Image (cartoon, rainbow, N blue to C red; front, side, top):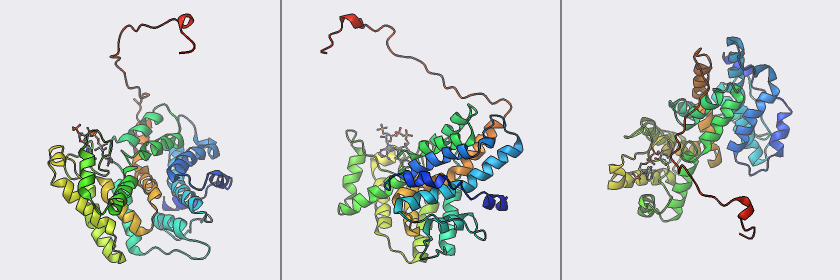
Length: 331
Ligand SMILES: CC(C)(COP(=O)(O)OP(=O)(O)OC[C@H]1O[C@@H](n2cnc3c(N)ncnc32)[C@H](O)[C@@H]1OP(=O)(O)O)[C@@H](O)C(=O)NCCC(=O)NCCS
């Protein structure tokens, strides 16, 4: 399986033209979703609505391998650097780091600490039942749209700040707090104010009404990794201070709002050298196996039917209107 993943790590050379056509400031999530869908153009043989087991396995292997290439190329495009290809002797995670950070002037050799940390982050993000993006992948896939199209839709769903996009928003919020003399109270008060749309990013979860176990692993891991890398990041201290302020505030206690997986992940990504706008792409890479597993389980179910949520109309039964001929065009 490892050999197959390595073998399929090249993308069609034409696809590089797409990257070059995006503006330099394009968000890498926009590029990733478009490029994942574009893979379907280059693999028409994998688009059958009823693939057999071998074809399904081929599509999955290609996607798993190529997505990290697309993600790294999106980054390279955003910083105006040359694209870097995989190296056969490197494992999955090391190859991704190599494609991200190697330049023609400097070969990047990830330390074992960074390689292991990214592996742990990917594993922690791998699956989480019917979250917004996974349900989206299943919804799109249930029409027998191909895997590339289904995963591309999942990437779009993940992008929102209430879902995977929260990891980017958390760091941006912590930076704002740092610039604001670490005034935690101001941000806690804003989050509590019902007239203010601001929410404490990285807090709260639809399912977890207690501390998200992934967040507690990541918090401990931040301590360990930052120490091993010899990094002192004031943003980590601000995150811990904000957590303490929130967890002693009756608003958060009563509503059972605790840090979620996105609260501390960004501190680790920063320490590894990833820019903030790549954080949600990293979430997508981690979640990819989970999305694929759900899609595979669904399409292999002989009883699979197209997803079709029902809607109950609760609006007025009769609405008055002015016939077109009697309307005043001037308004
Ligand atoms: C994750 C999230 C979308 C879950 O939403 P949800 O299950 O629909 O929860 P609700 O919106 O019903 O919230 C319940 C109450 O807590 C409040 N609340 C939830 N998350 C909050 C937050 N992060 N900051 C402030 N208040 C929050 C809501 O305003 C609501 O208050 P109310 O009962 O007075 O109206 C939500 O907690 C959120 O927006 N968190 C911030 C974004 C984030 O970190 N997302 C990543 C999730 S892994």
